[in-house]
Each structure stands twice: as C-alpha cells, then as structure tokens.
Length: 213
Ligand SMILES: [Zn+2]
Ligand SMILES: [Zn+2]
Image 1 (tube, rainbow, N blue to C red):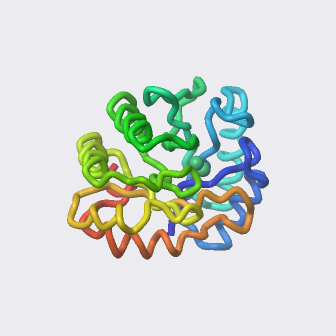
Image 2: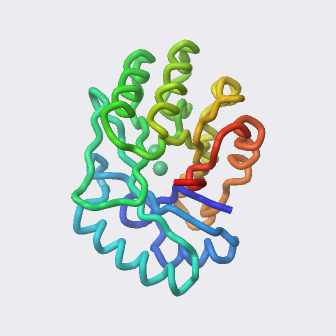
Image 3: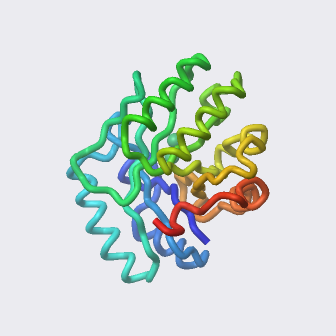
C-alpha cells in the first residue's frame, strides 16, 4: 500500500519524520511521500528545512526499511503560479488552498499544469475550499490537460476529493492517479482505504503514479 501525501513537522503536521516512518512500517506501507507545504505557506518548507528533512528521511528510511519520496505540496496562486524552494524533489504536488470563484479556480489549475512540471494535482474540488460550483465542461478540460501533461490526479482520503461526480467523468480515461491521506497527525498515516476503493471503482483504466515512471 502507498500513501503519497503526508505532512510532517517540517510544515504544519504534528509528527516528526521518525514517527511517520515507524507508523508506515507498522501499517505495511511500501512507499510513502512526505509532502510538506511549500514556501507560500506560513510554516512552509524553506530550502534549509528541505535539506534537514532530507537527512532525516534518508536516516530513517533505511532504519525502518520504507521507501520515502521527498515531496512538496505547492499552493496554486494567482495566475497558476507555484513557488518552490531551491531543492530537487521526487514529487511536486499542487493544489488550491483558497476559496475562489469557479472560473478562477479552473483557470489557476489549468494554467499551473500547463506552465509547470508538476507530478500530482492534489485534492481537486475539496469542499474545504468551496469548489462546489463545478462546471462539467471545464472538468473535462482538466482531465484532458492532466492526460496531456502526464500529471496524476490525487485521490485524497481526508478531503474525500475529488467528489464522485468528477470521478465518474474519469472512467475509461487513461489518467494517471495518486493516493494520499493528507495526514497531519500520526494516526492518519496510511489511512487511504477509501481512496484506494475509489481508485479501483473509477480509475481502473488509468495508471498508478509510480507505475512505469
Ligand atoms: Zn492541501
Ligand atoms: Zn496536504
């Protein structure tokens, strides 16, 4: 099993790297990604924090024998912009963390995917950020742009996003997908059952993020 979206103390999570790895081992996770918020966030991952986090990741991933990807979650800003610290990550996630009017929401996402080499679009249409006014024709646009750019759609179990009516549109599409808990606390690490179930239900024509990449 995989959990490719976990926050640590290096951003706004409450858990240190060793505890996350220990929990991942207990829960039999094969690969995890520690994905802290990027620098636009108040507690975001600066360059020096990213380096320090990397040392810990390397130390504990061999101790607990869990493969760990070094990831970052960038908020998608005005005009689709994302901001990254000067560090080479294994995975770059991008997501909306602001309440926006529907058109602006879609514009930012489409621009971001076309403009940057991101790996994962995280928690699309999370209710937390008010994206309830979905526009089906623009949803199709997002799906096409994801496929064109080989960007994975994340199935996020904490946000329960994307919602089923979006996932229905993804059926039979050759879409790459990722699985993430978006855990900010120790007990959330590996809580991905719901996401795995949805991936099976809706994305069986697609491909898991780590397959053949
Ligand atoms: Zn997020
Ligand atoms: Zn997150």
